[in-house]
Length: 157
Image 1: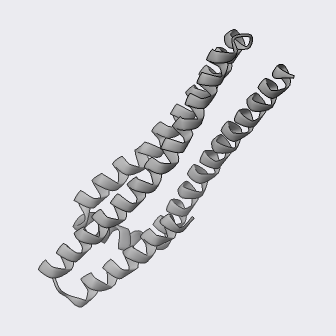
Image 2: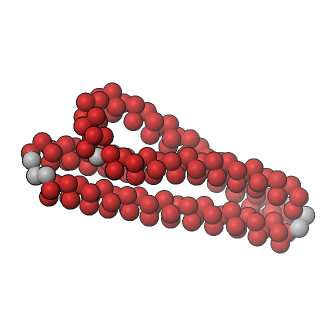
Image 3: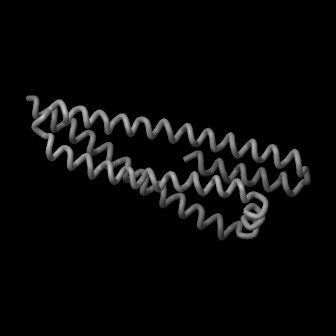
């Protein structure tokens, strides 16, 4: 009976990890395709944005690197999870402790991602507000609104 529950827990955690990996692969592919599409569509606009917004773009690309780091972390966690489970299958305490540890890492990651999204939106809006206050011309505010809409497209899904 105990081995049955142990196998069920292992199966559930495997499914969670695989779905997270698939989610990240899809998320990165969607982001890349959207970036490619928007760069073709608004190439002149993006040259303007990069020219006027280079401090923001440095922050933005650092922020995007964090997804790649987390994707690598997920793959390494999955491999280490499998290796540890091979050696601890018959030691229930270590097995369950490690399974809970993996689960809490995922919960922490989801929480951390939401927090970084909120911080990034706050940072972007404050940067825009400061920019609009200092350089209050019509076309600047117009492309600020377009870039805010563009940013929300990323944070909605």
